[in-house]
Length: 251
Image (cartoon, rainbow, N blue to C red; front, side, top):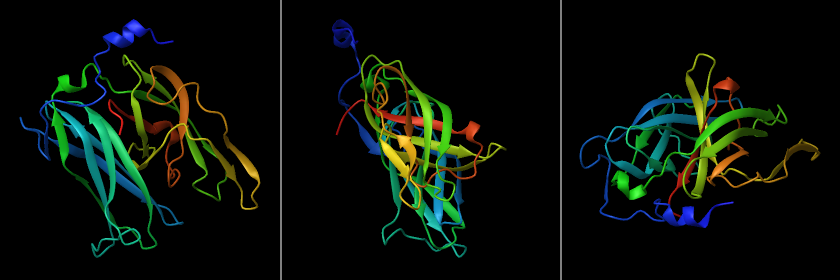
């Protein structure tokens, strides 16, 4: 139970206000950079894309857009159903923070290379988000319900928020690594979503029928899950990294 007096004293705003600048580089120098990236394309044409970002500025990067462009061996862009690029929005990256991101897609053509780009970011002061701190996540396990259907995968993790109020859950990002530590993919998905996995004959294989004890980005701790859009590549499960995307504002 949340103490009402504690809620009243909470300094995390429900919207970002104050003077903000939207640009690739922060007003005082620094920017959000891609410091690590990687991808995997499986035999079923699923492409798992992952990256790690770092905010090198002294400002908060708010609602940063990340684009993913895929190319063939001739460096011709491979659009998805006629639309490109793929875009993910990261709600908050604090000064000096590193955070993972990713996306999943399907390409019939062989993907030879990927480019990760940082779009415009709204830069705000640290004070603009109050005492907000990143919601952390610890990997628990990966369940693969049907090896013949690579997308029948869910990933459980323990989420912890020490913030003084519940935040707004956007999505959750996952980053996959090989046994060597090399980044080989990632994705984003909505957490807490009930799902039933079925085999080719429509028989239930299991899944998630009960909601977590509290929703993602709420105060305290919970075990919850995500279902990556293109499943999990041949990764070292123990090296899986989870990043809840929690925002101070809704909408």
